[in-house]
Length: 490
Ligand code: CTP
Image (cartoon, rainbow, N blue to C red; front, top):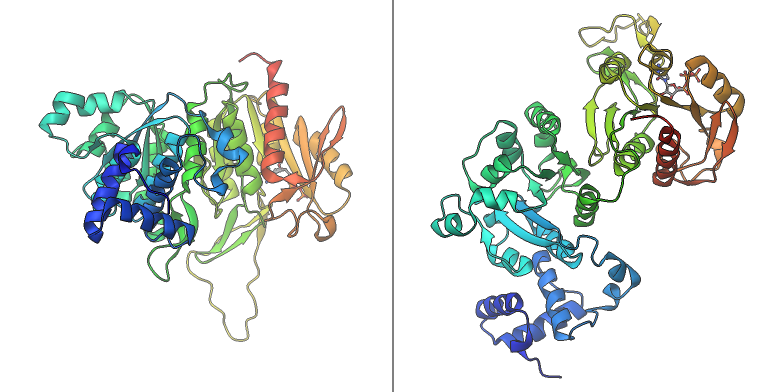
C-alpha cells in the first residue's frame, strides 16, 4: 500500500484524524487507512463521519483529484463557485438532524461559501464542535459571554458579518424564542441582532410541527420576513413515527440559499403575485369534510418559480401534505370562504394565479357535533350551497390585478370549457389540463402526479405545451407571466 503523508493534509483533517486515532488507540496513518478501506467497502459508519472520510480521500489523492468516481462528474464541476465569496452564518440547534448540517457545511464550502458555525448547547449533544470546526475550517461559536469571542467577534459582528443566516436544524424551541424576541443564548441573540436575511430549515417531531403553538410561531416568523425551507414528510428517527417534520435535505437547503443570495436581475422584482394552491376542505361536521383531489404540487411549484424570478409571492394554500415553498409567504386556510377572504385581503396585486381546486359547494350548515348513524334513519340529507368563485371575483374586481391566470381541470371538451371559463371568469389566461383517467399523462395521471400537459388559452389563441414535469410547467409559466407583466409599469 502507498504511504500516506499525514503532514500534507489540511489542519482540520489532521485534527479529526488525531481525535479518531486517539479514540481507537491507533496511529493517525492507520486511522486514515481504516477510513479509506471503510469508504471503499461502503461501511463508512456514522453518517457524520462520511464527510470526513470523503475529505480525507480528496486530500490524500492530491490536489485537483476527485475523491471518488461519484464526485468526478460534470455536476461536481458545475456547482463550483455558485456561492463564491458568500458568507453564511450557520446556526445549528439541538436535534438529531444536526448530523445533516455537517454535510450542509461541506456542500456550501464546495460551492465557494465561507461558513461560520454557531451551535446551541443542545446541538453539542448531537454533533461535536470539533466536527463542525474541521468542516468549516473556523472556530465554532457556542457561548454568549465568551470573553475571547466578545473581544474577537462578538455576537453583533457575528450576525452582521454574514450575507445570510441559516438555521438548520431549526427546532421548535428556537423558533419559539425568535418569534417572541428572546435572546438568552448566542444562537437566539445573533438571530435577533441581525440585519441580514434568515433562512430556517425546521426539523422536529410531526406532532410538535403541527402543534398550534409552532404553527403560530412559524406564521409570526414568516410575517417577520424569515424564509423557510421544508420540513418534508417522512420517517422520523423515533421508531413508528412518521409525518411532516423531517429537515430538508442539505442540497434542498443549498438551493434555497442560492436562490436567496442570487443577485442576477430578477424580472419580477417588485411585483406582488397571489397564488392559490391545493384543495379546500368544506366541513360536514367536526370530523368529516368534502374536498377535491389536489396535491398542491402544481400550485406550490408555480409559487416557487415566481419567487425565483424575484416576485413577492403570497401563496394561499389549502390543506396539503407538501412543504411551504422557500421564499414565499404562505397563508394556510381550510375552506373556500377562508381562501376568498385571504385572497381579497392580499389585493391589490400585479398578478394572481388561481391553481387551487376549490370545492364548488359547501354544506349550508355544518353540524357542530359529529353526526351519528341512527339505525333505520338512513344517511343524512346534506343541504349544499354554492361557494364563491374566487377567480371570477378577482377577475371582475375593482382592484383587478393586471394579469389574472386561471386553471381549467377538465375531463372532457378541454378547449371549449377553458375558453368559456376565460370569458366567464374575466381571466387573461387559462391553463387547461386534461385530468381524465385516460389523459396518458405520467404514470399516475395529473391529479397527485408529478407530470402535467397543459394548453395556454388566451383571447388570441391556444398554445400547446408538451408533457413535462410540474416544476418545468411552473418555470415556463413564471417566464410567461414575467413576459406579460413586462409591458406594465411596476
Ligand atoms: N376557482 C375559484 N373558485 C371557485 C372555483 C374555481 O377560484 N369556487 C378557480 C380555480 O382555482 C381555477 C378555475 O377557477 O383557476 C377553474 O376551476 P374549475 O374547478 O376547473 O372550474 P369551476 O369554475 O369549478 O367549473 P366546473 O366545476 O363546472 O368545471
